[in-house]
Image 1 (tube, helix red, strand yellow):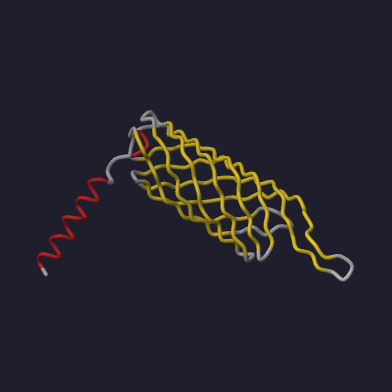
Image 2 (cartoon, one colour; image 1 turned 180 degrees about the vertical axis):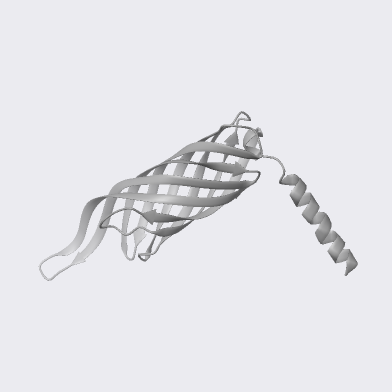
Length: 176
């Protein structure tokens, strides 16, 4: 029992010692896993969701970071979206708490019941890196096409409609 407790204490000290630095100014590969929520700010479109994503890229060591993000958003309105985004990020200071600004641009596949669509996504954001913890707030603007299966006695087929969506997002993540 004492050995198990000693191993747990040593592992805790090692993890704590490793978490003392900010990874934003370390040159090389950097990745993170994030989870958060989206709150839709539309009048007629419900797009509230729970979000899970991972980002991988290269940090240049001077606060600049370029990478790619892939994830899944589970909509409360019975559907999912799958975003694939390019990420540009800049951290302002090399300290334990480092504020940043970023921008994510890309596409998103929409799957709602048996209907589908695709959208262009732009998401400017800001936040802080606290050691390995990432906290991000962002505005998300989407514009795209949605294809619905339409069945009526007079017409049966697909109907394509255009949409624009606005959301506010808050995410927390761990970098590695």
